[in-house]
Length: 484
Image (cartoon, rainbow, N blue to C red; front, side):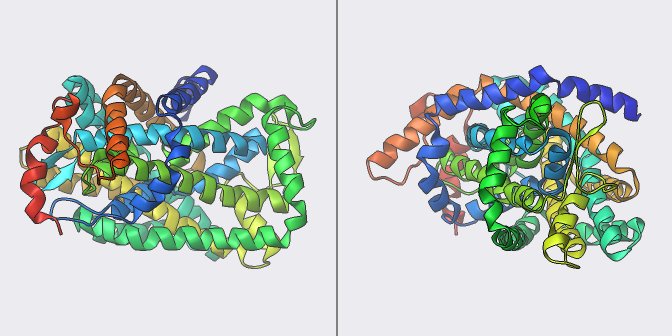
């Protein structure tokens, strides 16, 4: 099983594939004239604008759900793994994919809004929907929905729950199965309440956990502030093969930086687009810009916090491709949360293991919540107007079982399965957003034109020649009385 999964990952994440993903992000950045720089102020402003409605959630709630998916074990374990295999230079390539990936996140989230639908009294959307309505390929939309369902409900939850269980066992000696039962109990209560309960929980937990984590990182950086020039020099030299120790693994630095960056920030993966579609906005670009900024929050802020804690304290190992060690500062410590725990403990003795375990719990738990919401959306796409209650109940049971199973299986297999699920989704979604570049760019141009006139932009797809944006042509006006 593990050999097959690793072979599949060897194809999905081969070197040419990594460079193609970088090229796609750069392609969108150029076409949007680097909106991720031009519209930063607008992104921040829009995060706190808008309110929820009977059918939709607010922009901030949609951001929180998307961040729930983005900010997870990849921000702690994933960063450490990237440094283990790719050295400090991998951190630069994580930043690079976040910067150019922000444009990919904008495109997919804007498309999710353009082609969203009102289904069972709430807004639904995402790659499966915009593939069918935008490209006209129902079979391809169905393929994505099935792939997303398998990835989100079966393959990916175990990555998150495994990291929680391992962290709790290391810090508090809690049996992994015991942690699994606790996770399942809390998760079951939340997902039974639907998207509104998920949004309400996410908008409280996500800001709290991210700010708390970054504050601890700032304390450690402040304690080692004299090392700031040395750490940044090490990152940049290693990223471009200018460091004598790490120069021989530049390919690994790029591959692991991009792979773990995409795993963490999910730009181009299509996951954030599901939450984006649920937002109550007057123009698709509003949520596209908000979701673009969420990539920055995830990688430039939270992932960087982990990287800096590890690099400033020197609590890491880096393995060469031949299995020998380039750096072996903490012998016997397995790559993953152990690096971050060692880093915090070295600066704040006795605090590291518990802090990282609790951070992992919140980060990874909220990600599993987001996975459920994404899986639910794709179930709704596949079943449509048929009775979805039975299917949704089965989905809840499956994701709870797989979450528990993840706590007791090996970390290597958990990550391998997660990488495979992510890789399949990424490729299906990237093909779709490349084919649908035009409507996303038309929407951006329309938004910018209305802003120049001093208007609060309102979307009219007919005026732009965008077809099959049925919600905006019909339901948007009809729902005006329901907006709070």
